[in-house]
Length: 213
Image 1 (tube, rainbow, N blue to C red):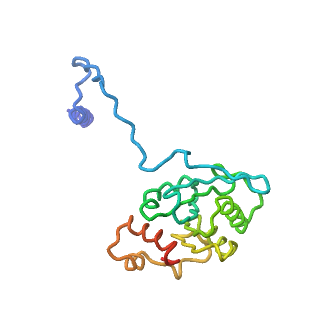
Image 2 (cartoon, rainbow, N blue to C red):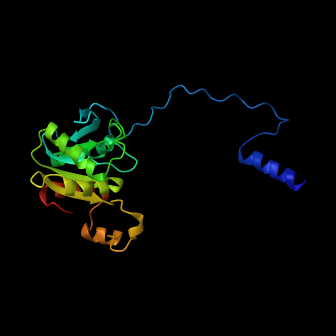
Image 3 (spheres, rainbow, N blue to C red):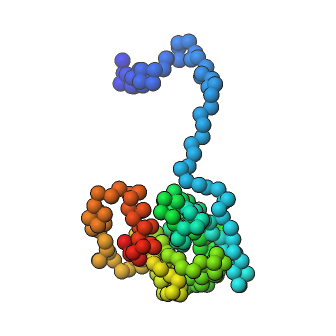
């Protein structure tokens, strides 16, 4: 046999196929029960979402998770992301009595665009939301792309109300380099023996008890 014929025979054996000269293959089996669609572990609904109309007429979208009466923490989402990302912290919020409030940045989700905005415009929107929700004090938790906005909040929000700002893997200007970064080894030694869920709980806990992780 030629090498091509050998290859053809091998592939037919590999996939349990018969040569074309053999009897036709039997029809595929009919599935009687359709498999259930996979479900996301986190909430994707809008039941906890709402909008606030800001003084300039823009809509500001937000969603609340965790304990409705817990200590409030504004969550600033990654890039890309949205308010619904805060659903990741819902169970931990219930466990720690934390009220997690995810917000949409301008032009994302339910928030109206804000052309020519600056970073320091974001704390003004959060301050309006805090007044709307009647929050006497609150903390900020930001991850990745939310980091610059968290720093703007640290500068722009009232000191007597802003209790803490925590940033996880905050995004910074690319031209500053990596010198002075917290290495993974340093992070692991700080939370030695604590798994990823525990680390996130630690961050939330420190948001309103210690002011720093």
